[in-house]
Amino acid sequence: MLIPTPLAMPHRRPAPPAQPPGQGGAARDATRVENPLVYRTVLRIQPYQRDEMFAIARACFTSWLESKELATTLSSGVHHLTGTYTLTVTDSYDSDGHQAALRLRLRENKEEKREGTWQTTLTSAVDREAGPAYVGVDLEHYPSPGAGQTTPCPPRLVRELLDQFDVLDGSTRLSAVPRATHSDALDLLLAALTDPARELPLVVAAVPSHTDTAWERLLTKLAQNLAGIASVYRLERDAAAAFAASTGDGHNVFAGQIRTYLPGVVLGSGEDGRRHRLLTYRRLSDPQFRNADTRIARYPRLHAVTTPQPELLSEAAFPGIEEALKNLRAARSATARTDGDETLDSLRRQLDSANQTIDKALEELSEAASARDLAERSRRALDQERKDAVDRYEDEIADHDATQSALSALRHQVSVLQQRLVAAGRADDAYTPPVEDPVPMSFAELGDRAPERMRHLILTYDVSRAADLDDDLKSSTWASKVWDALLALDAYGGARTAEGGFEGTFRDFCEAAPQGLRCYPSARVAMVESDTVRKDKKGHRRQRIFRVPPEVDPAGELFMEAHIKIDSKGRIAPRVHFYDDTAGATGKVIVGYIGRHLSNTRTN
Picture 1 (cartoon, one colour):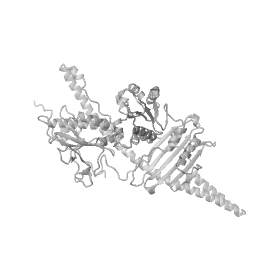
Picture 2 (tube, helix red, strand yellow):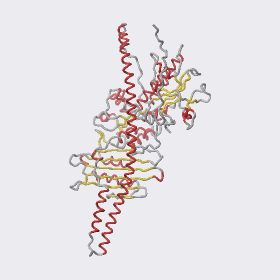
Picture 3 (cartoon, helix red, strand yellow):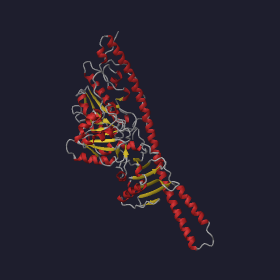
Picture 4 (cartoon, helix red, strand yellow):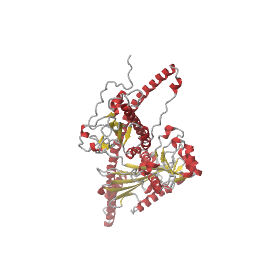
């Protein structure tokens, strides 16, 4: 009976069919419309402030307009404050005359400067029977055609509202400034961290071990960026040790680090610890890591804009264009009933009143048309988001099915091997798990650990560019997949250089799946790029030239077309590009790039 050697190679399986042009994970539509809603906060008003809620909201909005040096008339209707700013004020009242809702909308048209249109909407509503009352603020950005969307700091209006209203998230009062936490107040932080009623993210920033003015400025800007959508705690040095002891390794934060804790924290659970993103002090201090405050705020913003408004705000009944038309019809009817004996002055007064009503109706119609156009852009953006979500969902299902199938096969294999070891009298070996390093939670952590762990790799990739992937919600999943890919490349490098070593490419190695060696799904490995990329018709080849040691090429760089597909859907779809030098001067595999999908014929 012939027993295959561990490095025996089976027959090559056919490669999966190529995707048609225009399809693929990183394909982007040049006419893509981004969701204009870039910020949202919903403030639940306490019972003792409900009676004065509308007055306070108006006062805050007035103060905000004054800070922009704009007129502050908040009477109902459409007000063209300047050629750039348009203010719309709408009130709604119950049948008994009590105010039920208020909407204040400021639109800023900067199309002439190609900055697009900004729209800030304050909506306030109360249910006098059921009790709840809210003030919500939405900020929308509609970029000019061909321009990109920007993510600004929340409007000063939000800070004004937080100063005037006592808004709670669970047990925490929302504020636009960090909450200093010394050892005597640590219980309050821990209670807020684990509060089951907390609905918003909570950010803990641990003070560095030494004075750092840049870090202090970052924390101030971060708190402003998170106003209304998260709580920010400043963990002072005297409380750091007790916080670490109370939270454990999986949820701790060290000096200088900033961590975002999602709702539903489960202390003591390593799996739960992976949900809460951590930025190291070294990463925050990296000069190439720019706009840290905006990037840390990215998930809380996403959480906020994808959370539906309470029905009371979203379905508040405001008089629309129908009200203006009703007034117009009434004015026309009054004019038609004019008695022939009316004096000329009386006729003029009625005509002036009718003209004023007509002017107001025309303004309302114009505003309604503008609002309709912006609403249509919002609808198209939401359709695009839905399509992207469905694509990601389908890809995740396929990925999960493949993972589950491989896991089931491995579990069966482990069970059979354990039974054989027990039958051979080696029960201890059968049930003693091997020591395995935990997978990295982030690309920053991966960058710290990979050089020491990967003995058969040379890592020349831009660590900062790879760490940019940590901004995405899927970063921990991607980091673990890249870690597996690097382990497989390292195993391949060892197998190639071993005595009687493996012959073939990395893809061959993954298809052969040598016993006892780490591999990566071969369908995710591509050893070549398309002819269009290789021939550099649109500069794509240049993007794939990465650093190598001078003994590999005197120029210090090479075209690396071989790559590993970490994800196949979405606009990021990370890739690992490498160069196989196992038969060359270094005898190793050179990893030149870890980052988002580079452009190709399907993305341009």
